[in-house]
Length: 250
View: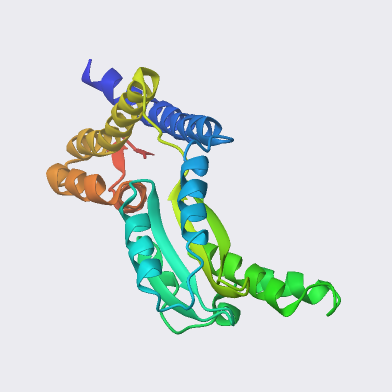
């Protein structure tokens, strides 16, 4: 009975590993498909930015503009707010991804290489100096990258009383509220069960095999429990062959 159990453990490890990999891939694809095209917060953020644009502040130091930035950050869907001077210098940066755009840095320094290569493709007269600054600023607020699958970004000019650009305001916001359902929960449970079966089957097999060979079963099983495949490989290479009569059995 114990011998049959031992023989079944490698198969259990392989099957559970395959189920785990397939489950994780399915969960990732399903979540991405649920989020694709969803942007329920866009109109709300656009209205908030329109309110800031309607202020027509005279300068970057306008008190009403500063209060407006604070109110924008208080919105639950807004995660980061940036303010750029007309020449592309970061004058305000606060929120979850603000660390990627330090104060007093410039959009030319922060923009990704891809954005610079894109500008190099265009003729010099294709974009005005202001438009180039906008494009580089858009790249700068997306450069952090880690949250770009769950955050959307907006960049809008803030005009003064005479219509000239006083600032550029950038926003990173959570574009969709994703709530896992029963299917997601069940899939996570399957993934966890598969992981446990896979992770325990290897040291269990090593423990049984080491006992049969008179090796230090507990020590080897503990080593494989922590090292997983690397520990298993070490055990297989180091284990003592079993001798039956004049034959050697691995």
